[in-house]
Image (cartoon, rainbow over all chains, first blue to last red; front, top):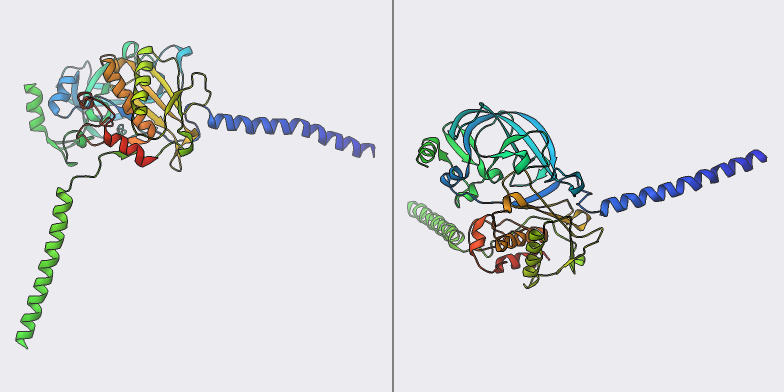
Length: 208
Length: 192
């Protein structure tokens, strides 16, 4: 009898603890899912607005360097909060990926090494038609702007300096032998089958 | 017998030619007919019951970008678009979270969202301005970029690179005068 009462009391004790914990957990989950910065869906979709370069000449003029090279590795990923001040970090930030690219030809500018680092918003983590990932082994032509973390991307800690493609995919061309295909053909004309012979591109860049 | 065969062949040729003519005619119509609209939707939107108002909150945003966003939402509010915008400076759950910073890449601004069954996750979107890459833009150009991002928040995607529309990427929209354009407004009305 005493044991039965004791058992019941023990159950009530558990209930007194468990029910508030469960209620708290459910409330926390609801607040979390409704809270700021879009939680609740694992894929983050994004649309960017950026300068549009609609010719090789425009891209070349705005680039610090233009290279043809092969993507050899993904060498880092980081979330860019747009600041190096921890107290100013808000929201989910922008996922950024860094690629190592082995350049085979430098069409404009100079590089200290044939290996360069290219950092862009991470197309694998962002569902965006403006940023498609580079794949290891791909040969690409890149129109690049030099970035120093301190000045251009203070939220980045992995690299002090690196390059970024002009206006995301606008500055990326996929190579197919001696023909280059822009990743954003719609920005170069109405047709979706725009491609550029490399002889023409070399001439345009050297004239520019 | 031979005459019948010839007649059948002629009739078949006539029918084939007529069909070819119809196909060609329809093809010409498809090629030459102007598109009814240019706007494109990205497939996710606010719940229709929660756009009066669409609340927004600035999180430590530089005053130039606050002004740009406020002027942009006023421009959208001045159109015949559904819903209206309202700043909720202390809201814990605004429908647009506005932030800024200096980010990797050479882009001006972006809008991000999660999507569940065609509706925004948590019924909210995030607008981010890159203050480094937008520094060279005038106040009017900053406002137009903000209008573009609000268009994304409504559910519009970028339009093809033709004509004057606020949802066109790049500088061309800066040359167009008053924005948003009617096609942008039609797009929002088509969504809601």
